[in-house]
Length: 189
Image (cartoon, rainbow, N blue to C red; front, side, top):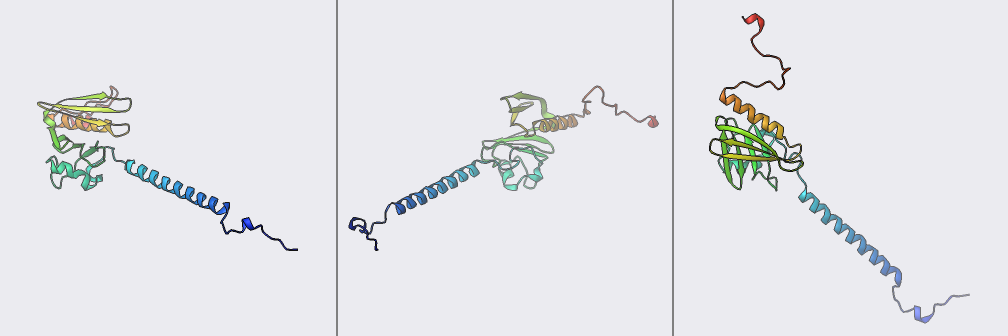
């Protein structure tokens, strides 16, 4: 017994199976392209680790300090005591710096610097639920540094206050009434 195929099916057409297989391959390829595009966008919008944290100048890549050097806020080989980046592209074009003799800020290519002895007041404002602004007032100018959560605003403020007091010859103030008196030892009388 032999089987014969009807003449209308014997025309050489690939049939439905090949078409479905081609559509499946196109769907998988499209999913792959969407995944690659999404991954690239996520990578471009991601924040480098520690990009906004207050860090010592030795931990900052040289290219991120270059805008401050171009504006004259940092010397060519100077390493700042503390540095905080606020720029949207994490490139140092908007940032604050703690130097040996002053505190400074770079914004829109304009450098503002206040020496420690010229600081008259520091002011802390909560601008949003999780963002803080620290304004440092000098005799004739002021600068404001903005910090997000866990970016080191408290350390920045402590450094500024400590350096200001040191420049004015004031000693550190005790943090609590229970702090020990650091007067001369009993054997030094």
